[in-house]
Length: 251
Image 1 (cartoon, rainbow, N blue to C red):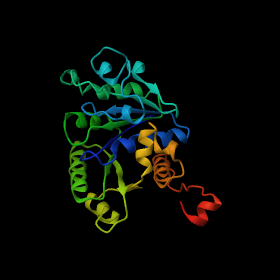
Image 2: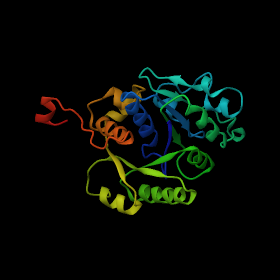
Image 3: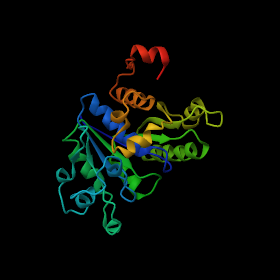
């Protein structure tokens, strides 16, 4: 049965869109049919990340009743399918966020996994993406403000009765001023699904308009995202294969 996973965060700039795209790419790499939908209608970034900032038919057209969802699905060269939102601000007030749930029901018939990249925070857009989801993943950074906002988000989801799969901690540099992962887990009272290291190649992937899973497949971040995807698929014992050189000299 198809699963709709909403990727959310308490604040912007923590790597939510990067996580949505790379989780989708990793699941696709495991042979799953995946559709990543940009549910961040106010400040959409999925199309920008994957080289499709402007498309003939976007999610906005679907929400306005001007197109069918099938017409707004585009296949990236990697094989992952995406539904971009429009960068235009003219029609934002007329968009019906509530239709995200209806759209999700239709997309479930077209893929094994539907991933919603929600708006950050707890506004109407985010709440609509929450409502559409079967389960949610919260993305945060190892910083007190980000983790505090993640806590607020988790509490709201608890009140809404929406299941949270766990937390992805991104942009981890391993420095003393960061919150320890164990402290984040204890504060949020949620499983830590993945720890994604700060990766200079993330910016390179953005310039190349692709997921780091594809642009730098041997990077530590790519390995972490593949392990996350394996965990989503129920394979908690998944281990990456390392070459002889990688074993000797590290990655």
